Length: 229
Length: 229
Image (cartoon, rainbow over the protein chains, first blue to last red):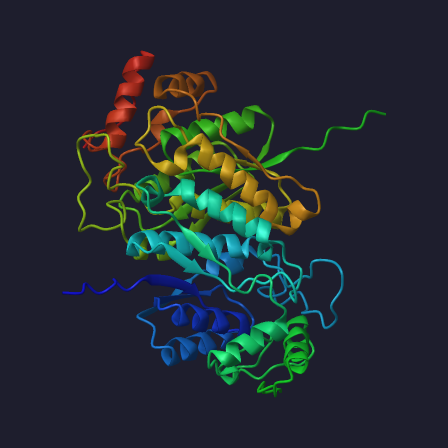
């Protein structure tokens, strides 16, 4: 009698954007049973969450949880959560005002908690340190330090269940990410990247995130399915 | 003309228990202007939050914020948030069921976010690795790893503002903590430690937290002001 391999399970952080949609497809391709995790932190681009729901449904994930993090939005300090701060339309060298204080630290901390409750050891996140906005919590050194901390933080880790943080896109250009996603069958028309997308998920075409996305499709030589306002 | 030293500011994680009350007093003694941070994660012992409010008022903190983390409680996995799991009345060698998955990681992540928004570099937390319940996220190696991660995670850190995590109680016994607090004028009758305190803040006298607290007062030779059910 052949004993079947147990199905491996993974949590995928799913924002609803291009990168996380690609990571979701990558985790599925690896054979993981998927638990998708999204966050409502009163972000301007609420249609991002609708995109996350469409992607989760399309990928037939086992469970999709949207965590209420309005407390993070209420702390302020970012153009993504504070309507008094404008979303910039030009990239620059400095970390932009769209940076949300400690966002990935908080997102990954919840993923760590949920992983422990589910007894899941694998977490995927679509951070990228090449064509990105310069956010410090997207860099490999941050990812490495978070993993080290996570493996000291939990009862699961103390009991020998190592926490593995997968960042398959971290060293890819946006064009490489798009080509990889197309190869995996990702329907990018389901995704929303724009920082100020309208309620229908239509993009502004001017913000940093729109710019990186459009340049990525152009460099990949793939038609851009983004709907603009 | 003498230029006055600028007042240093600090965030203090304030649960409402004995340890955090002592840390609050310690941070005040060091001359910090205090921003107190508490969390509502649907913990059984809700009167702990009332205690936190009393302590914050008594210490005349600059601001006291209570963050809604009901999403953490909803993840389950702990006797402190899931009424289907009983609070144990006997200590043991294993990490007890009162452990909340990734709790301190999430608490400190919010402190990191708030610190960045306030432009504060100092955060105090009352973790203790001597007379404690064996939670992994109270150990010095966890604290060290969190600090390392935090100093890679934020825009503030990239711009040279180091994040300092102060754990003045980490190597103290419960009796030493109590003696130190009494020396600093802490009114421990304001605090609630019990995992299943009633709505009036009266303690059960049987849980792990009650046991550690009672043994601490006894060893310190200081009258125990705890009100029991």
